[in-house]
Structures are given as C-alpha cells and as structure tokens.
Length: 318
Image (cartoon, rainbow, N blue to C red; front, side, top):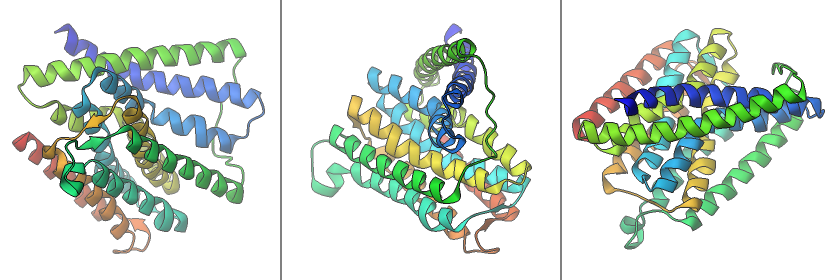
C-alpha cells in the first residue's frame, strides 16, 4: 500500500520539483543578465522535460527498459493526440510557417528514426533489437542540431517578452534549485518503483504502465502549459510546447538514457512505435485539412477519440 501512495506522491514531487527548479534556475540566470529568450530555450525547455528525463534515468539505471521506452513513446502519443486535442477544443490552434514546415516534420523524423533504430533484428538480422550507445550518440547529435536551429530562430524573431521571470535573491534561488532537484530525484524513484509494483500487482506488463499511467503523469506539465496557452489564445506556445517536447523526448531523453544503458526493444512494442509515427503524421496532415495551418475543435475531438481507442487497444492486448 505504501508503494502506491509513494507512486502518487512521486508525481506531485516530480512536477513540483520541475517547476521550482525552473523558477530558481531562471531567477539566477536573469540576475546574471542572460536574456529571456535564452532562458526560455534552455532552462524552461529542459525543465518541462525533466519529469520524463528523471523517470527514464532511474528506469535505465535499474534496467527497467520497458518503462523507459514506454514512458517516452506514450508521452509523445499523448502529447499530440490528448494534449493538443484538449487544447484545440479550448481554442483553435493556429500555427506558424516554421512550425508547419520544420518543427512538426522534425518530430515526425524523430519518430521514424526511433522506429528504424530499435528494429535491428527486422532490418539487418541482428541478434539485438533496441537502442545501443551508438544510437544514443546519434540522437544526441540530432538534439544539438535542433538546439542550434532553435537558437537561430530566436535570433531572427528577437527577444521573447512574454516570458515572465520572477527574480529572487541568490539564497532563495539556490534553495529552489536544491529543492527542485530533490523533488525530481525522490519523485522519479518512487514513480519507477511504483510502476513496477503496479505491473506486478495487476499482472500487466511494465510496458502498459509506462505507455499509459507514467506517460500521462510525466506529461502533466505539457498539458498544463498548452491548455493555459490555448485559453489565453497563445496558440503558438500551445503547439510549440508539444512539438518541442516530442523532439526533446526522443533526441535528448532516449539518447541520454541509451548512452547510460542500452535499451532492449520488444517486438510487442512495434505497434506503439507505429502509433507514434501515425500521431506525428496526423498532426502534419491536419495542417492542410480544413482551415489551413490550424488545429480546429472538431479535429481535436477526433484526436482524443483516436487516443481513447489506442489506450483501449493497449489494455486489451498488454
């Protein structure tokens, strides 16, 4: 029973830890006269991906690869179908040209690359299917290119004045950073331990728990950010947050995780990889269906229904 309680508390600690870590780090960066756009592209971007990152690090170190891979695949699917679906129902999401032609295709490419890299046995007849350390280095290389592209875009678009940064004293900022890191560490550990116990208790696969409960839980910061942005009619933030998170998840988190410990891939998870690719493809096609470069409310409803159908399939098969 204690494990289940700590599992729930783990999500609270994980998300709260990420938030106060971002606040403390951003405050220190601001005091050091680092521009808001750089803070947004680094500290805030990494902070919203911190829950998935920490959970994956613990899962990789402990050898629970089904949770590590399932967490990222599940997060990417829920980010597009569930989070963007909910956000577009709140307010239709208009998208900029850069996002349509560069960032969304890059997230699709990341999903396709993941599908290729984890299918060694199918593609070249190897004895091991999964993400090796070399695959991880390739992903991290793509991630560096993505960061370079993002900073290039920021220089063209100029300073982001919408980012609100609360300045605090160095002592308070440092306490926020330390507290945030502690929250992430304990929260991540309790979530991974709890996910293993839940899988054992309900006699289901760790992959199912990773793809659903853990994935949705670690995606809560993205859900909150995109939903609030949609409510404030800041559709660029709503979509950019999700697309950027999906790119971060594959190139940065899976890349780093597989460098720490190679991640074996189960043939049963092929359908989940395909679903990741399909979700990215759906988002790209929606940009040209109905109102151009906009996710409309009716499209959001369809995305949510597809996600519900996918979860029902998971429960029935895993």
